[in-house]
Length: 598
Image (cartoon, rainbow, N blue to C red; front, side):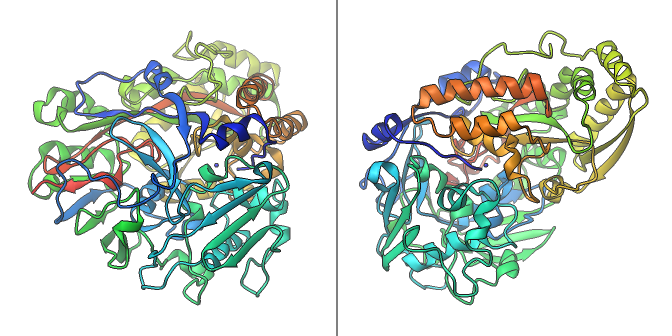
């Protein structure tokens, strides 16, 4: 999720030819035969992800085989939707929701074989590049409207980008803003109040010469713009009084196939058909169900039991992001009916224990924490081989540059941790008995994790002080610079399939601010300068090799976060639900293809 800049040549040539060699996450499958996916499955997904043509970008979306219209699809979700403003959306459950209610200039289009391409969504194509990649032109389609019937124009797209400069936007992506107006946190200076006081970015940066045309002008070639624009954060927001700034987070204006009929924060949400959505303009989304009835506060054990029982409304139900509860995995796999109703995939996330470097300055202490972690136990608590694999580093197997077997802290060779080594390092640092404020979220899996981690760190000589935090606001709280915690778990995956969307957003010290995804607050001069240097390399293969070298430096020389495991997903759905598949974009079940069989 942050800054990335590139110079031209090799990448530009690939884009001009209509493709860019990037690595995707596993396509997964439905109708699982009970075999856990491995990193080999992730590696198989390494493929060219092309930019689609104008024909690829035309609607309607390819029909889902056997799909029918009608019915209300039931959704069991764990966490509240803390943001409804697309500019603030940056976690998986909100991304899943965004697929149903928002549209942007581009989108990922996936077929049933797991092949993806970037196509125009509101735009007629994935973008027209010129000036060696410094200029990108988008032409809007005819017939695109917001839910209130207002046509979506270039002024709305300009507004959608410019509002992201405003101070109240803290939790969304910053790629396009930094590419347009400077890296780190300096982009905000270009438009400190956003567009709300009548100011705009100059035409030499962002131009809208007519109602149908949007032109991005960059100081350097930005060949990955079409990929960035697929993110929910760059979805269309109207340039009107309906953009109520902070209050827009409660009542957004939608543009996708569904609109929000009601939302009771922390309780429920109802989606109904958006009558102003035109399927003929949309190459990606469908509108099969009449609506979605989403209820919140369903822990994984609850949603799994309901879906496994497959009674009443549960036959028509899914969860966007709840996995099969780890304690019930065997029950599900042993159940002939449930076993036929599974979606699984190798996700792009690395689950890691962030160490707040503002508070833990001695690397020996960070190393001690890393050696102490009982990684095998953590994997077991998260579903065993169906939930993940022990991580040796901070790049997942789905990312270009991943090195199988990389294990500098012996996590794979010592899956239960090395408490004696940890204890020795803590003693050398003169910190035996050191207090560690450990934050964890109030979900079943994280609560069980917390017990295991507290026990392991206590055996290593730490005095662990646990603090439980609400799961729905987890990333907001961990994203505060002064969050008050020493250690806390986060999961990070690429925003689109490229290593430049992993290392810079997570480890660039120039990006530190509230809402930043540099959760460990690493601010290392060598890392910062290398990120700036590698971001200029045009050749993807060369850049990937350099990202991996920098990854090794971060892990071995700095150690801002202890890798725990690479994540996988196993999800269950009701027997009357059709079209269930794994989404390469959302990294969970695909909300776009669902329908009710009867």
